[in-house]
Length: 125
Image 1 (cartoon, rainbow, N blue to C red):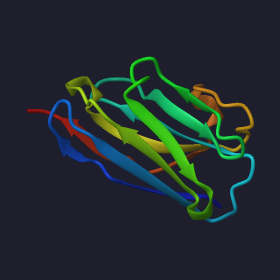
Image 2 (image 1 turned 90 degrees about the vertical axis):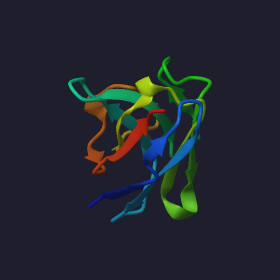
Image 3 (image 1 turned 120 degrees about the vertical axis):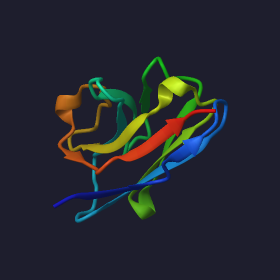
Image 4 (image 1 turned 180 degrees about the vertical axis):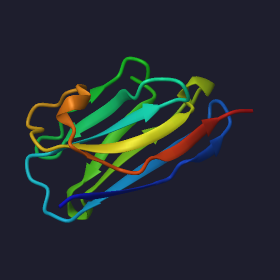
């Protein structure tokens, strides 16, 4: 029913920037939230940011607050993650995800039912 296609990952130097994109298809999103998680080698998948598809309300992990910005384009069913001031510890596979009951944004992974394939972000000098 829902397919998520991610793009924008790559290699960047510390202090640099990247913008990730995730395009949804398969149905018209309504009252959803779309967010980003990341997983580094040997680590658990962790919440990064989320935006309500309807209200635009956002929530960020403390580790990225002030550096990352999440946004949405309703016409394109696409969510973006603008990542600035990147640090080596931001290196991870970044996953797009959808919370079908996203009227209230949440960082709880169990609420997210649809996931993208992941895109690699590497921050290194």
